[in-house]
Image: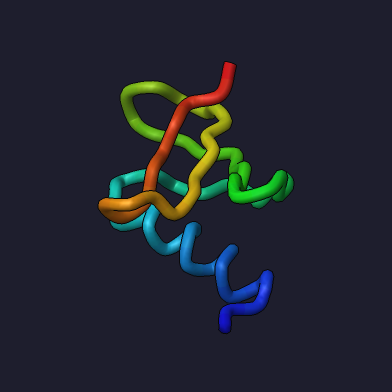
Length: 62
């Protein structure tokens, strides 16, 4: 079974693969992991990530 740190690292790695520059981990709320990220197109913003049926689900917060 994964520990909290392992899941956080897995979510962080997924964001990097998807083209996000991860600035910081913010919080965990249930299944969602919140990160401050940056992209060339959208600048700095917050996203939430969780395990979903077909991989990881990423949503912009706000």
